[in-house]
Length: 152
Image (cartoon, rainbow, N blue to C red; front, side):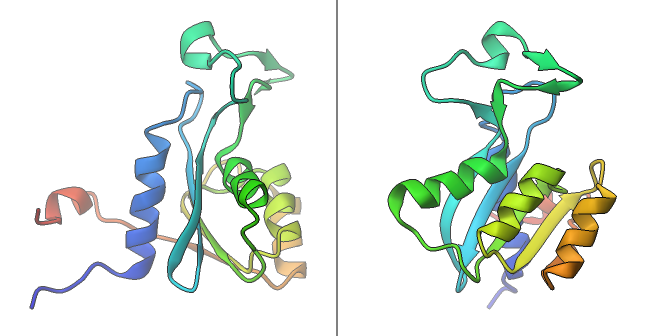
């Protein structure tokens, strides 16, 4: 039997796939929330439902941030809230290290482990909050040829 892909690479692959749906051109991010090795929600950077998208209208930048965009982590957490899915004790897989606001939401949602693929403006206060909350935070490594190595 062929060797199976490890769980953290499997779920991170889901986040990478979700990131392809991002509509903000500044950064494409995907997030997957997992509980007990089951995907419970996914999200990507995009506009509020029914609003204009950055890919169509350009980014709406204020103080260096696109305010049109809801971050992938927030979209995934809101999806859980919308459908009544518990996040307490879950894990999140994000293509980029969460911003400070997303870190606070992740912690407040009771998520106990953060996996990320890329460092991205890793905020010192966010790192302190993660440590204070005793939430595990782990960088996932995928080889350069990760997707080529998958046999379909």
